[in-house]
Amino acid sequence: MSQLPLSQKISVAVTVNGVQRAADCEYRTTLGDFLRHELGLTGTHYGCEHGVCGACTIHLNDEPVRSCLMFAYQANGKELKTVEGLSSDKELTDLQAAFKKHHALQCGFCTPGFLMTSAKFLIDNPNPTETQVREAISGNICRCTGYKGIVEAILDVAYQRRKLGA
Ligand code: FES
Ligand code: FES
Image 1: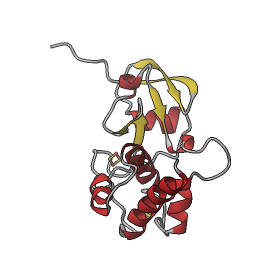
Image 2: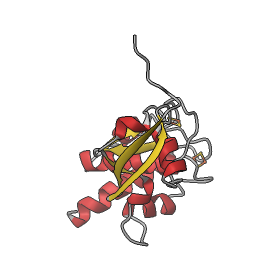
Image 3: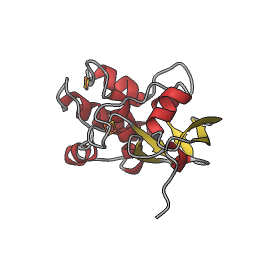
């Protein structure tokens, strides 16, 4: 069976937050490490590094993925969004503002993952129940706040968007 030359370099080109970026990395470089160390996008956090905590969640072709569970070369040619790309200007998004309002973060380490998970969830589920929200974020771990404020923030955004007809 042939094996990948894991320590050899490969060039990876992606579109991140609407910008085309390319850099060299090793075959064994994970996507999260590529974003953080080669592209300088340190908003994506690494906690467990084996797919459990959800801190490293980003969007790949508009779907949430755990960037610690993929090699960077597997994302070659794909569209990525990281937490830095949620807001296109200096203002917080409604979701980010709701996390602030509902005290949904303390140290903030888990927050990028929660934001990326819930941003996509709210697109797919504009009128969620609390149970659905709790299920949606069940793959993200927070060691600080408990989940009450996070759930309230997500439900609040859904409510406000419906009210605004957004
Ligand atoms: S760092 Fe990827 S799931 Fe924990
Ligand atoms: S706010 Fe600290 S881990 Fe969630």
